[in-house]
Image (cartoon, rainbow, N blue to C red; front, side, top):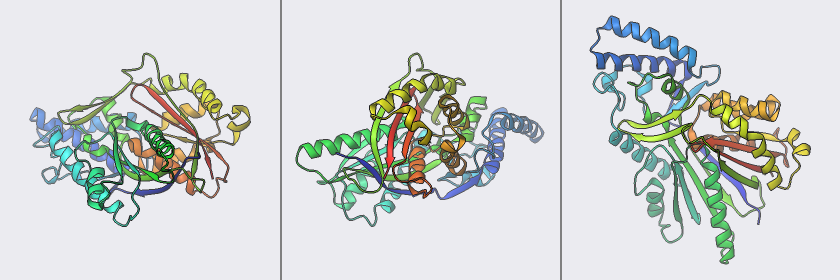
Amino acid sequence: MHTILSRFSMKRPPHQTSQAAALAWLARAHAAAEGTVQSWDPARIEAFHARLERVIDRCACGPTKIGSRGHVVADAETERWSDMVLYDVVNHPHGRGTTTRNAIYADVVSRYFEREYEGEETAPSDLIHVTCTGYVSPSGAQRVVQQKGWGALTRVTHAYHMGCYAAFPATRLAMGSLFADAAAGRPGRRVDVVHTELCSLHLDPSDHSVEQLVVQSLFADGFIRYAVSADDGPGLRVLALDERILPDSADSMGWALSDWGMKMTLARDVPERIGAALRAFVVDLYAKAEMSLGAELGRTVFAVHPGGPKIIDAVRDVLELRDAQVETSRSVLFDYGNMSSATLPHVWMRLLDDPSIARGTPILSLAFGPGLTICGGIFRKQ
C-alpha cells in the first residue's frame, strides 16, 4: 500500500515582525525586566540595555539568517509594556504565568481549528494534533470534531511534547492507522495531521543567559495541516521512516514546563553530536528504502528541519552536499524562523509546490529533538 502526504494547508500567524525589530525588542524587554527586578533608574537600565545589544549581536541568529518571524500576540510590536498581554515586564519581569499563557494557547488553537475546517465536509478517519507549546483538554482538535458532528467518524490522537521532530512520529502514527483500517476492510480514508506551535508564548525576559537569548532569537509561531492517505496521486510518497535516540545525550536538549511558560535547554555541542551520528543514520535509511546511497545522493533534495543555520551547515558538511540541496530549508528558516514541529511540513509543502523539482525526485528529510533524537524519512515526489 502506497502512502502519500498531500493537501498541505498553511496559515500564517496574525502578526509578523522583522528579525531586526524582534531582536531590538528582545533587548529592550530584557533590560526593562532587569530594571524592574533591581529597581534601577533609567540610566542603569539603558547601560544594561547597551550591554545586552552587544551580546545579542554576537550570539543570536541575526537578520541575514532569519528575515522575519510570526507571532499570535502583538506584544513584540510595541514597547508600551503596560499594554501587553504577556510581557508587561515593568510589573511582571518574567512575563505572565503559565496559566495565562496556556489560556491564550487554548483560545488561539480552538479558533484556528474552526477556521481551518470551516469548509471541510468530508471527515477524516483520524485527526492527529501535534504540538509542544500548549496543553488543554478537550483540545482544539476534539472541539472541531464535536462541532462538525464527526464524533463517530473521526478518532483524535494527541502527539504532544516531542519538539521539532514530531512530524515523523505523527506520520508513522497516521500510516499505522491506515494499515489497521485496510486490514479491517476499511481502506481509502485519510488521516489529517495538524501542527499548532505557539513558541512566542514561552519567553522569560528575566533570564539573560546566552543560551536563552539564542533560543529566543530562533523560535516563532506556525500552523500547518496536511493529509496522509493510502493513495497513488500527487504528493510525497513515503519510502522509508526511521528514528533513533543517541547514547549519552539526554541532557543535550530539553523542553520543560516552568512557572513562566516552557523553557528550552540547548547544549552548544548539539550540531557536533548530530553530525557524528548522521552519516550512519542516512546510510541505514537509504538501505531501508532499498535505494543506493551512491547512486541517489547526488540528485536527492534535502528537507532538513532548520533548527538553526548551524544544523543545516552540519548536515551539508557531513553528507558533502551542495548548497542547492539544502536551500529550501534555509529559505523556510529565513522566511518564518524555527516553528518547532510545524517547520518541517512547511519545507515539505514548499518542495511539493516547487515546479523546478521534478516528479520522481527523491527527498531525504531529517529532524532532531530532545532525546537526543534523530528522525528521518525518504520520500519521492509524484
